Image (cartoon, rainbow, N blue to C red; front, side):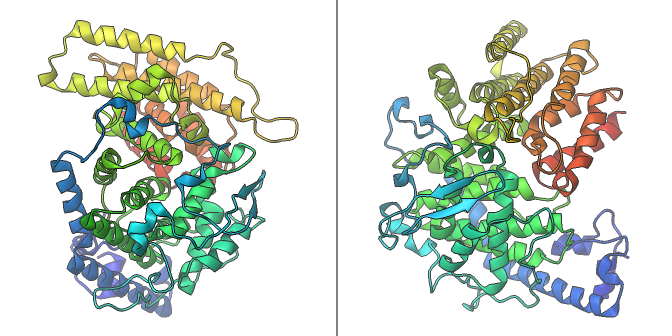
Length: 556
């Protein structure tokens, strides 16, 4: 049997890759001897961790918060969102998106009564000062119970006791080499203002110092105020569901980068369950929509950015979370923050291409494209907003072609295909040549890098457009040239753990899944994944590469 059943002294049905017992209890199933099998003492500690996970599973099942959350989101989808808006001019998603150079203090609660200088490896940014941090924020007055405070920072179990960990993993404050940042002022400050149990403090520190920079590298290249960090920090301070989501994501990232196997599973599930519980209760009350929106987006975005391709722990699909996002946006009494506008658009557009459905806000993107309104996607993720809007249009076309009831004839398909090809060409810059992204000082030139990333997304969008048309064949010379073009453009983008390959999961997937076995794209991608080290093993990028290897094995 598997080693997990052997240490539990249970009968194993030996199903591969996961036996029935491990699957039922959401445990890591080992058919190769794991590290903890080496000594009797290690086996005892592992058995304690397994017992903790089983108790967690039973508590989650008994409480039913995850199931209740799914039901409440489903109920939201069954009824039309409540909205006072009568025309598209007041569409909340029509607002401008993320801008690293701007900061609107009214969109987030006060941060602190004094300035904090936070230095990254490339630049420093100042978090805005406020005159009085103790004043309640109007936007969160109705949901103050979501904010961590002296009496509310400890999640409560079904028996009403403060959360305790029977066997907490010891996380060193000194991060592994390559993960540590030279300046800890922001994380140290947060540890003084956010009440946490001692075993959770390293998770918060790791999230602020490492996870944010790993999942959002593009804003870091812009000098000046880092408004994305400001918004994340404010949510950490004032939104309990958001806080526990980030602590769970931090544990997931630690698990990936330190290869901790299942040692941190209790921490991951503890914080995941607490975040879901908070969101479920807020949905039941029907208030605190902005807090719920922030927490739900965090569950989608941060988890997708750090999750393992082999994740076996119970979770809720991003599509279910996004149903809540769509309904919440429709009934908000004010637009989401620019940062959230960008996150929503990014998740909606690229997620829709993966499930073959029209994006939820496709009409909004069409309007913004016609009016030249940015969603902040280039400044946050590196890709020109116009290209992202056109990817949304291609997803709409794919949905129409796949729907027999739409009655789309071939002539209409060809017309829309030609229109989209032309519009993608119009997004080409006047100077199509790519240049070195490094300035003489060694710093990244943001305009040069985003031009390269946008170019790769544009080429991938063309491949995607060809792929949705009837009769598509990836052995066609046009497709092979487009895939080869992406491989060539990659040579201009910095690779390795401090590079930007993780920003390119979607276009690399589009190129890889439509590449032939002889394409040099496969060799280039394999080399760049190896150069990434541990950063190539997790998140959307890690899952993308694992799927590609399976596709190549099947098609070749």
